[in-house]
Image (cartoon, rainbow, N blue to C red; front, top):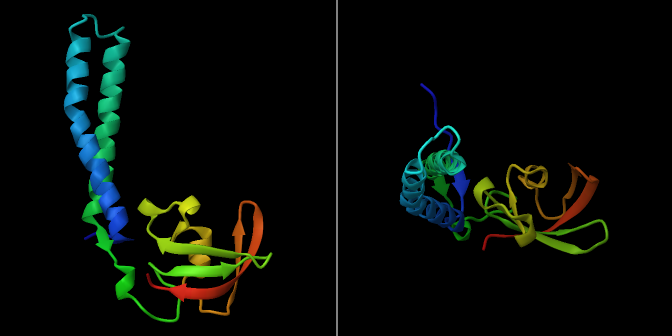
Length: 158
């Protein structure tokens, strides 16, 4: 029997996925309307509108199934309920980069990762390198632009 792998995520990520499913499900009747309208134009073999609407329907249904799968496996974690001196999922970490500039990241799930907002996935190269580290430890991570070095300055659970 296959085991279902839980997907850790923050509440904000869970809410974002729930909203995406709601929006996609709201699009369903519009797609059906577009298909019916295109069908009314006659010959389906050369009907671009029909084929585009059917393709969109397939994309929407696949997206709904994928997101609902993620939601069913979601393990919502509240970082405020966590503590400790090691970097774990949900931790907000302040690092010093090679130029002694502070950078701050929160370790989150894949569904909510957005590096521009300082939210990195626990599966990203930097996320994997940080998990289990403590304040004062140096971290080396290989990214597409080369090797980067960081010093763990602070770990918070906020």
